[in-house]
Amino acid sequence: MADALLMDRMFQRIMRGLVDTGRAPQYAELARALGVGIEQGRLLLHDVMRAYPIGWLHPETDYIASFPPLNNLPTQYRVTVRGEQRWFAQCGFEATSATWLFPGETVRVDAPCLDCGDPVTVEMRDGRIAWVDPPGVVGHLNYGFGPSRGRPPFL
Amino acid sequence: MNLFRSEEHARRWPAFQARSEEGFIGLAELAGFFATESRHHMLDADYLSTWYPRRAEERRAYLERIGKTSPFWLGTPDPGTA
Image 1 (spheres, each protein chain N blue to C red):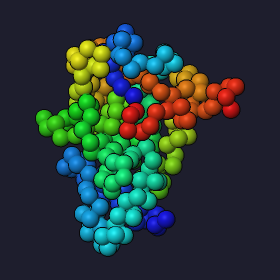
Image 2 (cartoon, chains in turn blue, cyan):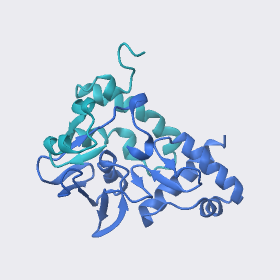
Image 3 (spheres, each protein chain N blue to C red):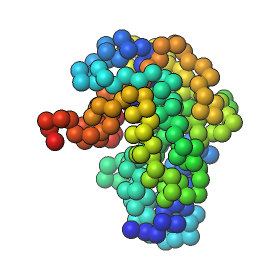
């Protein structure tokens, strides 16, 4: 396992990269940014993902698929900040956490309802719900947390 | 873990699991669940080493505070299956 400081630095680079650009950096980019070799960067990425198991790499690759609260792979949870829809949330629950990545900004989440396809919209600012449409929007956990939860890519 | 227009919409979802009838959470409670202290530090330089390890305990405490104490929510084994 890599040292904690290096893992922290990589974690922050990934999260900051997602926030700034809407996509997660690739391990070679991360390696360069951290001043380590490419292969060390790749191994370090795997260490970071093991330490942050609520995210995941695309199976059998070194590509970041999910790094909650955001997702590198598009989901139905589209996140808009300052009028730009660059981001995706990992899931509907994590979507309510994206607000903490954009302090002082209104963060809008748009998703189609999986039953009818009609829109679900939530706007948050610094953790507070600013707008909800329709007013009856609910969160739903289809599999329990822990051992009974589904496989991560199918949350 | 999804957002639906209402509970009825969720129940009509073809993938809805019968067990998940207890899986509903109001939006305000959900926002609170994802607003525990560690979440405020996701951009900090020491998030992974310092803040992320606190997340599980925070989540459990929050769920207990809002009365979601079943194995389904807490991720603990179901009675009789442990």
